[in-house]
Length: 201
Image 1 (spheres, rainbow, N blue to C red):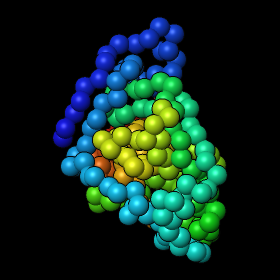
Image 2 (cartoon, rainbow, N blue to C red):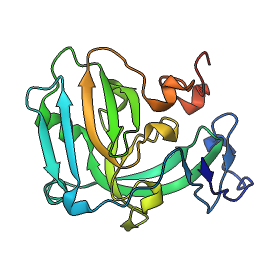
Image 3 (cartoon, one colour):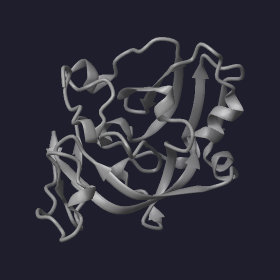
Image 4 (cartoon, helix red, strand yellow):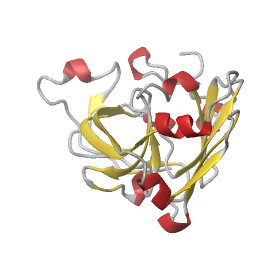
């Protein structure tokens, strides 16, 4: 696992925004990955929503950018204990993608797939109603490759391993199925405020 350590320390007055066991990384943004960083050509990348949907749908890079854009401004939290305040991402709401594909009534979970083969599972309720995005900008600039560029999933209310880098597919499922880290001991949901880091937490 390659790790770039960020800055340590709390900024005064931000403690109430830190979930238990976290520290404020400040201006840094650590890079943690269990796999080689891919170099993806956006013009060859696609995004698919399939599984338990009425109309499996695939968007190209250009088609995704034609959808109404959406932004997230807030905090993110990594299971490795760093948190980062006031980040800005831009992309499209997952709600828009699901609306086009039409989830079937029995769909209750989502498996996010990356081009690398990485997977992570989420309850459908955690990616709907304005809680999740597919993003390609960070801080007004293209999302860096080491942070999932050209496109990553963003689910900021859960630990950041749920925000799959290099995402290419959202598969809707009736039953939960563990993804990469979940099969290796991480919690199935990953709520930072409940400190759901590992299975059994």
